[in-house]
Length: 100
Image 1 (tube, helix red, strand yellow):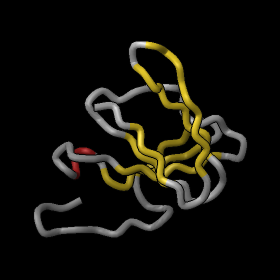
Image 2 (tube, rainbow, N blue to C red; image 1 turned 90 degrees about the vertical axis):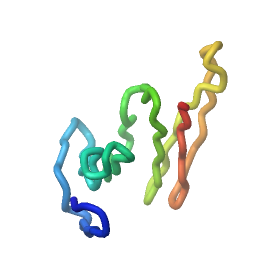
Image 3 (cartoon, one colour; image 1 turned 180 degrees about the vertical axis):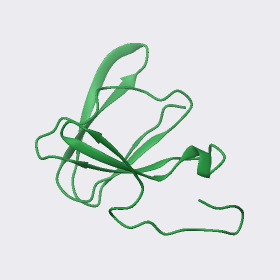
């Protein structure tokens, strides 16, 4: 991707493609591009797709910017008790899952 003082622009159909049933992701910025600072993916899901299985990233935050459609995201409110809260997010919403 480039070193200090460099940058790049990737369009909608650019970046390494990862295809899964019902959705596709493109790697826009990888951890190796940023010395482990971040990874940015563009994900497109078929309508009605449930999205990724419930999971956590130890030591990493995860954020989503919703361009179109509606995403329902589950959050664990208290790690000591497995209760969850569901938050719907529509176009132009940002969803952040803080795990630190």
